[in-house]
Length: 137
Image 1 (cartoon, rainbow, N blue to C red):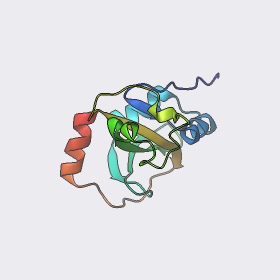
Image 2: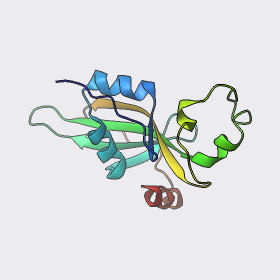
Image 3: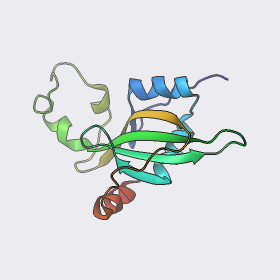
Image 4: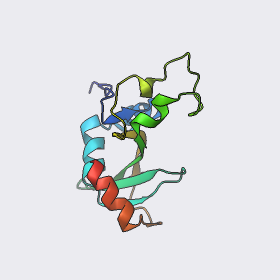
């Protein structure tokens, strides 16, 4: 099976780590986006200001889960002042290459993985944050 590297769009930004993990676990970009759009479970990510979502993958013999960790970012903020965002203003950052209107949001996909079996439940995300995320997607 040939792996096709996903392209960054106005709505989604793929980190190199996420692309590496997709190749490692045999996940496609369409499968990752399906997990983000219709998750079975949503939790706070282990990294600050991230969200982890999961869909079960139930083949006949072995049950597993597909997890995606992502972050929602307001695209216009860091572009207006790259130095304030901790970036070198002389070197364009890949996430800032596309033009955005002020206030438009973008999903930064940080990582993806398969969990063998069924993972234990952790901290669920509050309902007000979930409704805001669903408006983005």
